[in-house]
Image (tube, rainbow, N blue to C red; front, side, top):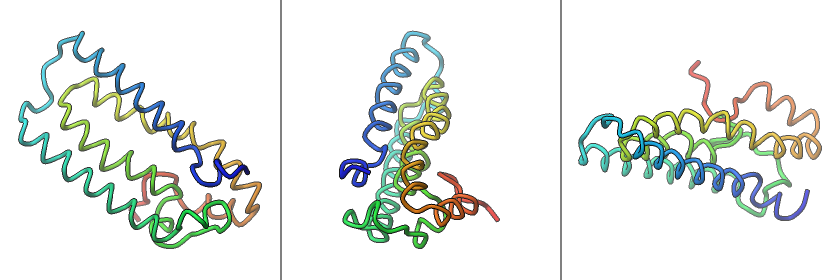
Length: 154
């Protein structure tokens, strides 16, 4: 595991893919001229604000549970890591993307948000392979009991 992989994982690659695909979605949405999802600017701003605040809260909790110096060196299964294996990515895929999608108010953006899950599942595969190599059966057991991005309801 390189120092870059240890510190950033698959985050930068995923953010780039998400950003490029969002640009394509916005262009397609404008080109198709579909009606708005809800049509309320105030609702869109409120959703974006709440989504961003929730994402920042989860990110702060994640960084407190696993400071950057411990990444790739310690397997943390407490804090937000108790609920999902990738809480930083989950913060973007869940509350932030939902808020952004409602802010952008387009049907193609709704499809874009839904497609982020398979895109990020593919994106984290290499990162998880490195974690399996580093932590072995302990990480494999963690993967069996903890979902990647969406916490279990029960």
